[in-house]
Each structure stands twice: as C-alpha cells, then as structure tokens.
Amino acid sequence: MFVSIIFLSIIVSYAQSQIELTLPPLPYEYNALEPVLSEKLMRLHHDKHHQAYTTKTNAALNAMATDETSDDQSKELAKLPIEVILTQIQRIPEKYQSTVRNNGGGYVNHKLFFSMLRKPTATATENQPTGPLFDAIENSFGSFDRFKEMFTSASVNLFGSGWVWLYINAPTKQLTINATMNQDNPTMFDKDRVILLGIDVWEHAYYPVYENRRNEYVDNFWRIINWSFVESLFTQGTARHSDL
Amino acid sequence: MQSIIKLAPRTLVPVLSRCSKHTLPDLPYDYNALEPIISGDIMKLHHQKHHATYVNNLNVAEEKYNEAKANNDLTAMIHLQPAIRFNGGGHLNHSIFWQVLSPKEGGNQPTGALAEQIKKDFGSFDKMLSQLSNASVGVQGSGWGWLGFNRQEQRLQIATCANQDPLQATT
Image (cartoon, rainbow over all chains, first blue to last red; front, side):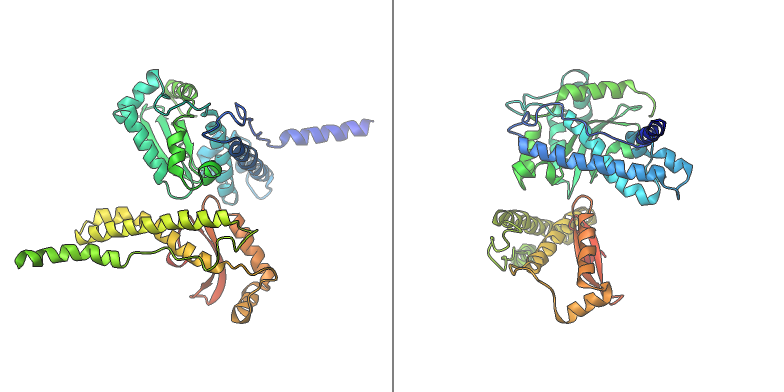
C-alpha cells in the first residue's frame, strides 16, 4: 500500500514535469466555415496537421528539457512557454532548433489562425473591421481595399509553403504586411511584433477544396476573417508598450 | 530602309524568345498508369495544372528577363531571378520526375552499373531506400528528396532541396 503510494507519486511528479502542450479545439464546429473551407478540410487541418505539430513540439521540448548533454540554461529554456521560446530560437541547442522552430511555429501559428476564422459572409466586401483597426489600416495602406490588394498579392505570390501576416509593432504602432516561409512568424524575428491577421498558404490549408487554385482560396478567405477577434488582438497590441 | 533596320533588332528579340519557349512534356504513360499508388486525378492535376503553370510562368519570366537584359536593367534582372529559379526549377524537377516513375509493378529494382554503385555507396538497395524515405519524409514545408550522383566525390548521395530548387544547379 505504502509502496504503491510512493510509486504513484513518482509517476505523478514525472507526469507533471513533462511538457504537455495541448491541441486547442476549434472554437466552432468543423463544418462552420462551409462552403469556403469544407468540414473534411478542417478535420484534416486541425486533427491531423495541427495535432502533428503539437505532438512533435512536445517530443522535442521534452527531449530538450532532459538532455544530459545540454547545459542547465538550455534545459530551462525548454520549460518556458512555446511563444517565448520561439522568440529566442538562436538559444535553442542546434540539434533541436529546426524541429522546435518548425513544429513549435506550426503549433502557435495554427492556434492563432483557427481563432481568426468565422462563418463565411455572403460576400468578401461586406466583411470588414471597424473602429480603430479600420482607421489604422486606412492610415497605413491608403485604403482598406489597397491593404486587401497587397495582402492578397503577397499570399498568391509566395513560393512554396508559408504564411502571410499583418502585424503591428507594439512600440511604434506601425502596421506591416509580411510573408514568412514554412512555419516562421513575424514574432520570431522581433518580439515587439504582435500578429493581427494571418493566412496559411501551405497547400494543406486549401488543397482539398481549391486544389492548385490558391488565388480562389485567398479571394474567399476575406469572407471568413473574424474581424472582432483581430480587433481584440489589435487592442492588446496597441496597449502593450514593452516587450514580452 | 533605315527605319526597317532600326526596327529589326527590337522585333527579333521577342521572336527569338518565342523560338526557345519551354513546353510541357507529355507523360510517358497514361494518366491512370500509376494507379493505385498515384491516382489518375492526381496525375492530371499535377501535370496539367502544376507543371503546366511552372512552364507558363517560366516562359513569362524568361521573356521579361530577356527584355530587361536587352535594356541593361540589372535591377529588373535580379528581381526576376527568384521567379526563374522557382518556375525553372519546377519545370526541370517535374520533367525528371515523370521519367523516373513507371507503371511497372513490384520487385522493382535497378540492375547493372547503378545497382553496383548503390551497393557500393549505401551497403544495400534497402539501406538506400530507407535513407531516401527518411530524408523525404523529413522535408519541412515544400521540397524534394533526391538520389543523385556527386561528380566531385564520384559517389551517389541523398539530398533534399527546398521548394523547387533543382539539385544540379543548387548543390
């Protein structure tokens, strides 16, 4: 009895020291984004791709945290929130760097991305932000339509796999459109950047519905942006003055 | 007479680039020849949409590049290089790829000099396959896994390339 209690507490404490990122559920039903993104696509994208990023990030971080050949700093780094680790990629031991960057990036990017989506509006033009974010976009890009053109063009022209982002620089309040490759995101390169909007242009994000027609996917993407969520990110971003 | 001579060089350039336009090679087999491993639908998409787009975009980029070169516009030339790399690489890679695939069924192994070289450089055909598989599965984002011949070192080598970077040009 006593022995089994000790045994159990050892297991429990081991389990607690395991790094365990969890796959967040979609904030809506799998079919909520039909017909722009099908239920089948959403199941694949969330249950397979996002799940794989989650699993592989956990494996890499746990290996990093328990690696006897690493120094204590590296082991401690593995226990920080993944968003923080990703702003310090250079400090990750080389053998884990690309795995953590790709899978941790994938984990974080998709977590954000799925929250930025909503049930499609009938048309793209009727779906727009309001208030301070709308004004900020018009000020930065000349007009909301011009912003859409630039974002669309970057999305359609990206070679290979990557993302296109709209981010705000928290101290300077400057808005920027930025394309990154693979699972990189703007915050990895400067922790003062707050992501507002992103589009996944990996083929896995659109192929089951649009096949090779990425431009059609991007045109329809404007119908499914959850601008209230994006506005909340903007409010948080503008309120922040210092870095993480 | 003079105006004809002046016009000639400018009109020759587009004619020349039209002569050397890249074309989409036909598949050496039917679209459904690789079923069930690769479906006829996928082969059609891959060949008629993706590869065709690389060919079209390559021709457009090359034509613009020739024009920029004719105008000594170095900035424009450099600006076009990524498009030539991506679409040119895509065209090269896929042209090789269709040739490399075959409808012949299982127990499919090379013979002769290639088989010998594989044994020499990898120990066995299975070891080479397993390395190529692992490398290919491990590619992050878009790219290719290759078995190639390293001419400098005179041996076979497995390599991966990102996006449409062609093996010979970029390694």
